[in-house]
Length: 294
Image 1 (cartoon, one colour):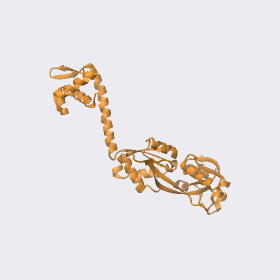
Image 2: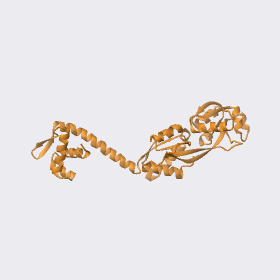
Image 3: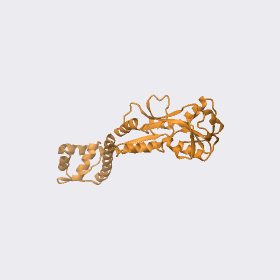
Image 4: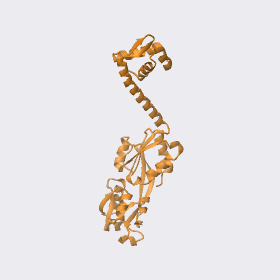
């Protein structure tokens, strides 16, 4: 059974006439008759009964027509969707680390969609930690991910897009507030709020402390600067965070590091040598050209 046979069958059922159906299908009547006969033979059932020059569906032909209509409709829907994806009206699955959810992702996607030729592209948004993002990328759950760099991923292309200075935040009235800058070693004397240890920034900050022989007193973890700065504002502790817009909305003290300049890099990652529909490719090019700032 082929899709052509289903289409021929539906057309004959609509016209109730082989010659008229053949004319619409632009094939010869004998070819159409042979196709329907072959279909009936395969199904082992009679689909049409002749009435003079016309034909009509048998009871079983009407049952089969219901299924044939659904199959053809699903096929037409699939073809339409594939044509959409092949044009500039496709869909993009993006995933990103939690700190980008507050401003960068919504702002960047909105700027992309504000361009007339991209206005009909749709997006799905997912928030995860870097290891889960990379796994999802490799399983083709996501088209593009925004994450920290991960080593030993030869099939993934990492493009640096955002460079974030690391800074210290404290509650107002904290002993460190009187300083113009603080050293990394001074942080160990106070309760610290850290990023989730499984996140890219969590691993990065812990690696910094470890490489400087500092044992931080982490009292809790949180996924992003918005949540961390809220805890700092309520005097739960201090924190070493990426300098983003979120922390500047809080009633807290922001202090630079005195003895070291720390920069955390966010990467755009995608599978190498992997087919991309135009919508994904256009968004990728937009990020590389115009999405490198928060």
